[in-house]
Length: 283
Image 1 (cartoon, rainbow, N blue to C red):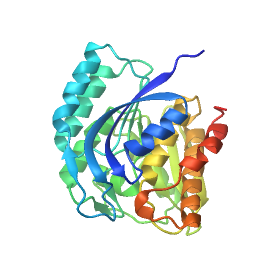
Image 2: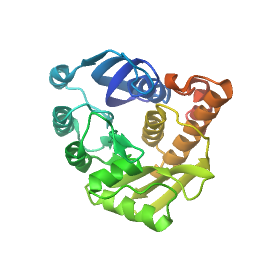
Image 3: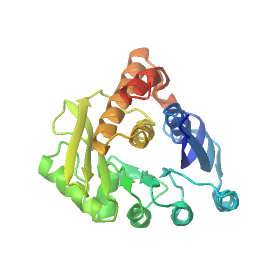
Image 4: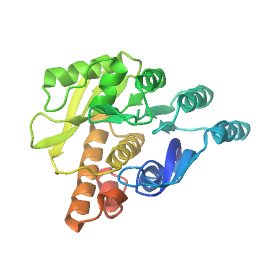
């Protein structure tokens, strides 16, 4: 029996509203990868559409967890960071990567901090600049166009895009340091949306698009990133992993829309896991 690969997932956790760790844990684990977590914060619900949610910052616990893991000589095949709540947490994750990255360990950073042309309310452009330092030590980054623009110090441009613009952005992002870029929210018209990926080592640029489903669905970025990482760690190329992630995310949205589920509670990815495992060649 082959030994399980192991990932360290560094995200917040919301008790209700499937995002961050409540997406990463089930998706990556279902794909046959041991998922170890460092929670950055605990919330009663995800923040989109909810009010009066509880929030407990766990910054002071992150470094002691890492120190304990170092004493145990834990080795990881991947390190995956998502929503980080402060500049201090970015520094902690940078140090974690320094301590735990080794040859063969993949570092994936989702610079979750902005969308729709605006930074999230708790962040400013100084945070975006600090995030570029974390992206510089990653192997793969998965920004949307808003996050990409702010990290590059450029004005945000809404969709639809041209291939020339998308591919220019991919190469500019790669110049920050990561060798592999996956840019989400790619749309050339009003009919399809998806992602574009770039591997600077091979020069390959590929697109994974799917028919657009109208509406805003919380947590889909975390579903996408978790699926892409799981597929990539199962031996798929970056382009294939992006295709699998786009299809799984869209199908999760479609199930949610058809059921009329309150979008605040996240998308129905659970019923799609058997198909995901088939698509990824795991079963």
